[in-house]
Amino acid sequence: MLSRSGRGACRWAATIDPLLAGLRVPALVIHRPGDRSVRVAEGRYLAGHIPDAEYAELPGEDHTLFVGNQRATIGAVIGFLDRAVAGGALRAALRRSDRKDAAGTGWDSLTPSEQEVAWLIAAGMTNSQVATRLGISPHTVDGRLRRVFAKLGVNTRVELTAEYARVTG
View 1 (spheres, one colour):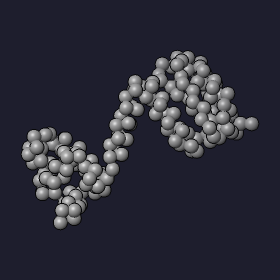
View 2: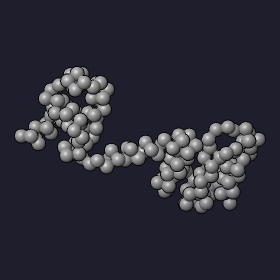
View 3: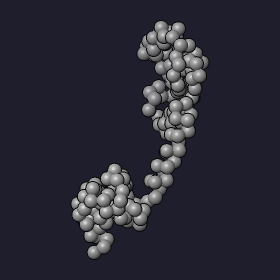
View 4: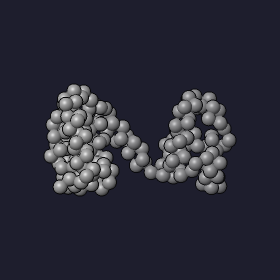
């Protein structure tokens, strides 16, 4: 039996039913078979009446999207966006990000170019001075410095300088 809010949602959905066939956007309908607010048949119906919609039936009973097994929900959304919107570029970017994250932490995890930027910043140089010294853009220095901060677990130039002094002193 549907809850009062579930019945209201179904009535509302019936008013948009004639509009579904006219949708021309990537659509993902996610439903959980144990959902007590809206029957699974309604989710399947919705996906079946939106052109080219994808339907993902995830385990569980929660109606709210990000309650319950969030990993499955996020996986379904990322997979859909990668296929329907990004043409495979999203998962490739996530893999690159994961590889960077897997690089580790601490001074040993810094690449040679990150170490060079860290040493120069610890010596008191500005991003512009580092960029001029290394023949790179200030934007590139900023990106490397953000990665250095993340890998060393510091948030400021002062903390970076103190960390540098600790490991070299």
